[in-house]
Amino acid sequence: MKKVIFKKSIAAEEYVNKPICEKIKKTLKEYKKKKLLRKRSNQDGVQTVNVEDNEIATFLLNCFADCIKKNYKPKKELTCVINNFWINENKKGSKNAAHTHPESDFSGVYYVEVPKNSGNIRFEHFDMHDQNLSHYFFDDEFFDAYNIFNKQYQFLIFPSSYIHEVEISKSPRSRISVSFNVTIKR
Image (tube, rainbow, N blue to C red; front, top):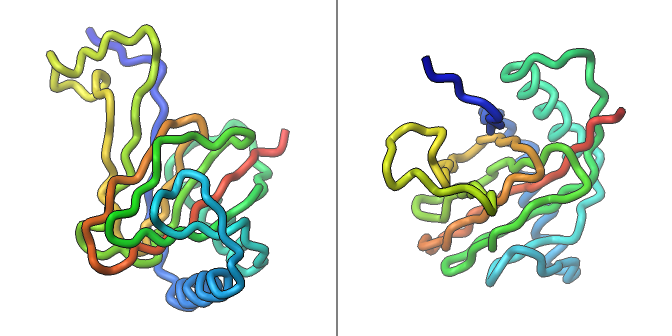
């Protein structure tokens, strides 16, 4: 009998909220106009500084709570806070380099606009002592990387320690997303 151990997961749900999506696009436009931008993992795209907007933060936190409820079994009621969030715009040729999000428990992304071929998020397994057995087996516990095919209104959460990147966009239209970090209050 096979027993898979030490697994972590990624959870995805769909939350359609057109008014919030319009607000996110409007906020992105304002931040770009005011040059409230930064360079972190985004390469050749646009990334805002942390956004201060209670309506967007509340939406993200409510989606997070619902996503947790639908996908996990907490041992007790959780109190969670959004540490920060920012808006990403990936244009043709842009990508996000591999990175993690320290000092939080979960990270996530909400996809506002996702044109075809605009780059998917890719998660990498990293263990210095792992033998990378994915060359020999089809079983998912041996995968060394996993791609999520992004779609509009997709809400994705994952442990903040996961190494992830976004592939190069080949779309002439921009992909717009909101990334965020969540901490569980102890």
